[in-house]
Image 1 (tube, one colour):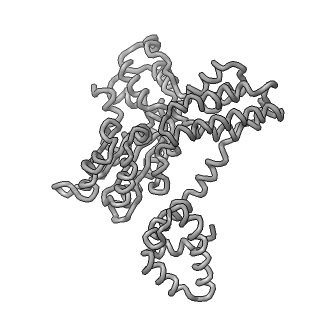
Image 2 (image 1 turned 180 degrees about the vertical axis):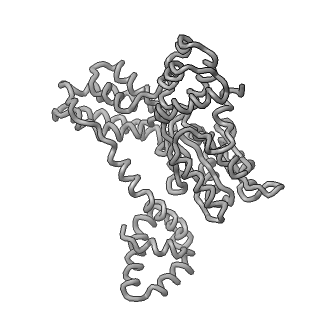
Image 3 (image 1 turned 120 degrees about the vertical axis):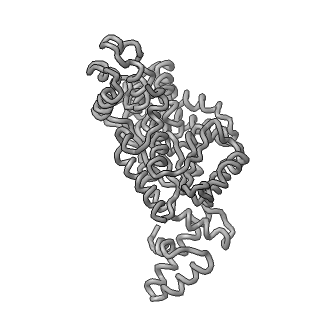
Length: 410
């Protein structure tokens, strides 16, 4: 019997990854493009724990016969380590001609412990690497990895549906002769909550057991569903219950993201003006502590922010909240998703223009690009395309695609 932790991660092909067919397809396309000679940005693989992110990165390397150069959370924390271990393989192949692939695992978990030069070293590596790069995180919107936005493409892994996981466990039981009964498989699926890794570990632990043996594995502490957490915060009148609800989400939902969810949904629950006002006051105070945490790099302030956005909002009401309205996904996240392509390309162009303009990327994006965009559109209207293309190519080294992009209105 293989060790349970290795069974999930040491897979020879992406065909062995359970569920997430779309994500697997995106990873294959990423690798195929690179093998065909295309230039691809690093791929950020993100999603809940246990859904196969790291396993997929290893499987992709195995399937395309790439040599893995990997750093995990215990390995890289500083600029020196990143440069010493990754720079050489990022620009070379193995002795036998195999392509290297750079894998940075748990990057969002480690980012708070980076030294001051680590972010810059990773950013430089992304710009200069000739080898494919895979970065793995739980939440792509995590504040700790905001420096990656605009530099990477991303693919999402979701929790595996119960019916898919049930079929997979049944097949595993047959292949490995585990002798799992239908009731045991159902119990494992129920306990796993879409976590493939924990389901496979449970399967090996319960191999050959009868139905009653399923009780030996207690129901694991799972990250509470965001909607049930909001329900508890909005409906409770006690500090303990509301803070417990928020704490249940601390691993998967960062405080900044929770602020977005609360901001979007407070008006849907608190229909009385005073309750609404008091709740937003508590939420606003929580953002003060979040800002202090960011500026001082002292994340002990998070506990005060969490208390205000949970208990503060819960105790702000004097009337029982409206339970008829459905929760809404934060609009700001939808807007960021829609504008992702534009922000990424604008940043790419602004970085090239920095050498000639000598302004920050943000200033170039906000103030200069709209002017250049108007210039390109005017030139196209007046039949002066060639002169404008020549100007941008020679002065800023922009590609034809990037110049074409400037034609689009902001």
